[in-house]
Length: 81
Image (cartoon, rainbow, N blue to C red; front, side, top):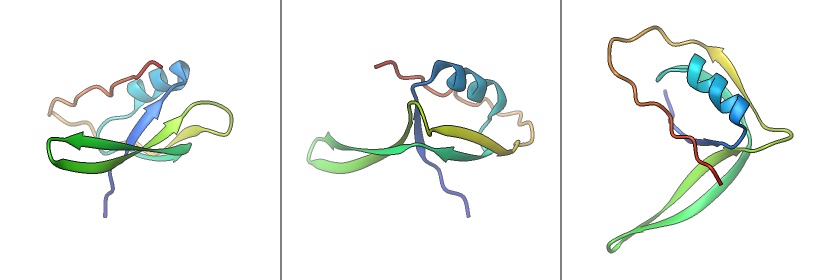
């Protein structure tokens, strides 16, 4: 079973390394804090949960690299606060 999560990396060095080495399907271990945000779109509302990597005690460990794919993969967005 696969699970997909939103990850926000505020450490530029770690974000650059992750963007270079990871592709869709790469298995990673993420250590960070959870941030929940209420999202409203018209009458619909839901909670979006993100894993935030922003300093001490936070890390990304690559467990298994994905096989190269021919499909175009979107680059992860890097948020600046």
